[in-house]
Image 1 (tube, rainbow, N blue to C red):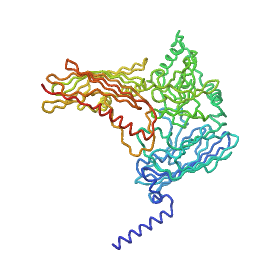
Image 2 (tube, rainbow, N blue to C red; image 1 turned 135 degrees about the vertical axis):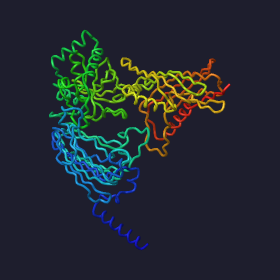
Image 3 (cartoon, one colour; image 1 turned 90 degrees about the horizontal axis):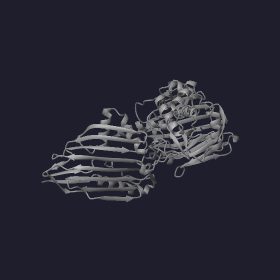
Image 4 (cartoon, rainbow, N blue to C red; image 1 turned 60 degrees about the horizontal axis):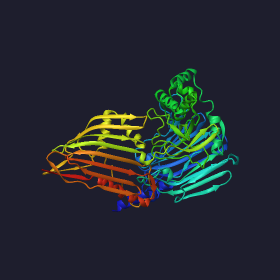
Amino acid sequence: MKSLYYTLVFLFFVLFSYAQKNNYTILTIADSLKENADAVVRLDQMDITIASQRSMNLKIQRVVTVLNEKGQNHIDAYQHYDKSTSIKNIEAIVYDAFGNEIKKIKKKDFRDQSAVSGSTLFSDNRVLFLDYTPTTYPFTIVYTSEVETSNTAFMPRWTFLGGYYVSVEKCVLNVSFLHNLGFKKKEFQFSGFNIQKTEDSDTKLSYTAANIVAQKREDYSPSSIDLFPYVMMGLEKFHLEGVDGNATTWEAFGKWYSDKILNGTTTLPDETIAKIKELVGTEKDPIKKAKIIYDFVQKKSRYVSIQVGIGGWKPMLASDVDRLGYGDCKALSNYTKALLQVVDVPSYNTILYGDSYDKLSIQSDFVSMQGNHMILAVPNGNDYVWLECTSQDDPFGYQGTFTDDRNVLVIKPEGGEIVRTKIYEDKGNIQKDKGVYTLDENGNFSGSLSIISEGSQYSHRTRVEHLQPTEKEKHYKNYWENINNLKLGKISLTNDKENIRFTEDLLLSATGYGAISGNKMIFVLNSFNQTKGNVKRIRNRKNPFEIQRGYLDTDEIEVNLPAGYAVEFLPSNYELKGKFGEYKTEVIKNADNKITYKRSMFIAKGRYSNKEYDEYRLFMEQISKNDNAKVILTKI
């Protein structure tokens, strides 16, 4: 026992001495910061110095203790650079759990690669990033970098909490700027977080945040950008792509962008001009002309992605896209605009945040360079047709879920304008199922089904069109996981891009769908469209919850019962109404040993408080229970 005692005492003093020598030991991290955390940010500091309209320096020091493999995502040790942005310094030091130095990583040891795949034109757009594989967890990385850029249009959006399952010991932002540049800021979601504004003057801004505990992800939560604290910053007088700019109003900003950045980028070769005029022919209707041009662009070009923060907002020349056949979102939008000009169809470059999961809007009350994506707006009466020029598959004017229902900036020659993109109404997001299935005396199942999808559900269902046969089979078996021993027969897919309607016609069969016990057969009536999964119970939920897009499913299924069986029990008709939507089923027993099953399920989009979550869970639980209602047959 004595030897054990002395060993423990020795270990304590060893660990204590490590803690005294180095602040990066895990022993000094508060237990509250380790709870629910994959990583702990010990220090996240950025010092921004804006020396002039054409000069911005950014120094970063980021110290992250990674507790497990998932925590690797929170290291964030990378820097983009191009011809207007240079990396003055970048390095990292790795420490073990007790603060002992393991490795030094110099600039030459960072991986340096193109920020663009599949393209040589954008060879100046590159990224340096740390590629470190640890031998054990936890460990700590101290990352420092310094970047200088002449582009002052994009001031970083500073987040005090970078995501879920990461906590923050200390976070510091220091900004120095010239008074005459018109520096501005906007704060979001500060309430409830320990954030202090330590300086706010005509030339300086500083914040310090401390002890922000890790947040657990909760199902149906709004975007983290709507929950976590951050600061937007911008300059009224800035520099971009070699040109000084002004952002006092959206109108002034849009006119500057049109005159100084986009001007001169839409010139095309004479042979392309002639080809487009021949292609459009005698067509007079502007929208029909635009359809012809859009189809041409989809067939001729392909999209290459430039990572956010690279490439500025000046598109490559339309003549280069025409010659090479590829470009990023700005390039392809601008190329389509150039082709439309040839046949006298006006269109406008449109800046926005593209995201299928979070409908992020341009902040209309904060005039600055915002967004991560560009599309094209074609005037159509008092509205616009929106063209996603990066897609080779989207129907003309279809936005799907990547750019719908959000504020965007339309760039017109006379100035910028904030506009809302197309809203797909809840009851227009349709899935219609119509089918039939037959059960034989052994409970075996065979049937056919037609699924028609429109609105936002169109984009969800069309993905199956591009799957390989084995992937397609896997998709449908996952979709109908409620049918054991499923076998797929003929699959016929019809993509009606003119009416934006996707139809799936399928033949399918399964053994033992009806469970036989003695002289009875039991089976679930709703075989084709059961509500997937239960809504997770979350005790003491913190966040509000959101249904981003509503939808309407309707089903009409005819069921042929097996010969020699009579109906003992049928589910009752059922109806459920509430703030979240409506659900209704109707079961009809026909004289010819058939059952007709009708179902409609409408879910409304909306944002609700955390207190309403349990009510929603119970609402969906009732639907799921009724979707699983069973029929009992008795052998005659």
